[in-house]
Length: 159
Image (cartoon, rainbow, N blue to C red; front, side, top):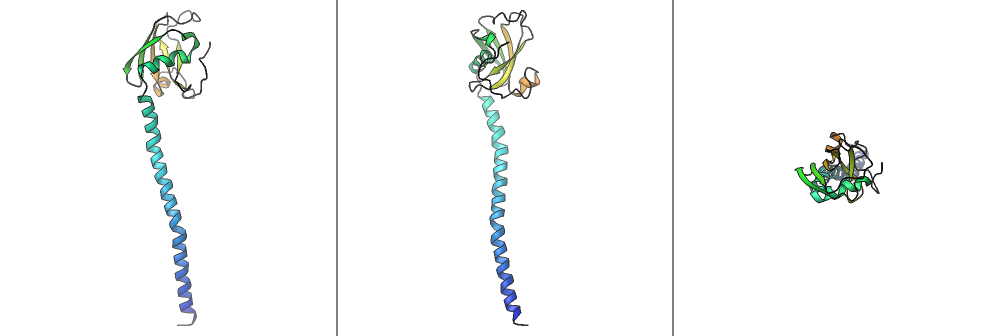
């Protein structure tokens, strides 16, 4: 054994301890990042689903004229077909006479935050009965496009 052996051993031990200290915070940080990512995967979709679950018949009724100016003042009354997904709405008054035959016409719905939350399809030529869908179901029903869902809509659409 030489004079260098104990010195090299101490130096090696010091390097090993320093490396452990340096690596430990990264592992904790990485673990925190992974935990935050997992939490986001659970919370964000849950919040989206919870938001749609809170949609009442009255909110759907308000969202129909909020999406289309021709439906302003029609006083929709909506009932649940499939909770938070599908609603049947009957208007107290027919829509503005902008369209000669409303049957099959599709219109977006806009929530209280002024964002497109779904859409409706007229079931009658007079435009007094509508089938409305919230969220992705409106996209599946080909009432609105996927890029339009969630878009900001500061006022009812015209035309």
